[in-house]
Length: 111
Length: 188
Image 1: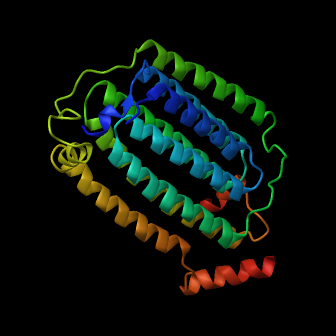
Image 2 (image 1 turned 45 degrees about the vertical axis):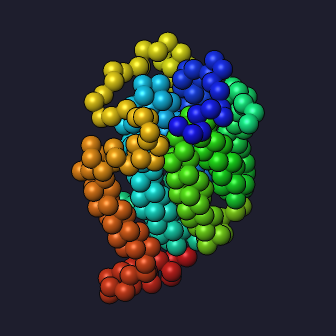
């Protein structure tokens, strides 16, 4: 690996990354529960997905196994599909409720 | 070439990512939240680079910071929702309960990571950096051999997402839908 010599691992274990990912996931989860703006709630879901990606990459390096990095690809694809459909739903809801919509207006999906 | 300790980069960018993540949650204006989200994503891309996952770092910047956040900003601008939201709690005590739950989640996950309970066995899917191979090559070989079937399924998933987005976001011209829309516009 050509890049391996530049960054020396002085005592940074996978545990550091796992703890970082745990805190990031919790921030995303709290944000999802606390905020009422649907768009910001979506961003918090992205935070949680990214925390999981960090965990996958950390384990991928720790176990010297490429599967972790391959699975991050699939997480990315699912996140992109989720954002596309989710934002379309939000646009449709805002079109019905012109004067501001919160997460509570998603009960419009009942029809 | 000077040697950069991984710890320095880790603490700088992990701290940056956590601060920006708090920004995503705490900013009143959704545009500011989206910009904080960009900071989080790029910091995580740096964390990928220092773990020798160069391909994922590039994809992270291109797909997440490039496409997904632009989509968020586009919808924010399209809908004009960049005003502050109501602070009233629809469910009594939801916010304290949410913060308590978040602390419990963080404690549980940190305990898991700290104690290495969650380490798994090596799989037979292939090693990360075989001799004389780059990160891109290793990941690509894995994607197109072991994970070929899931890889093809992602194509189906993306097509479904495109169709779903078009169906949900277009204005319907079916007679029943037009009638319903007219009734709602009279109500407002």
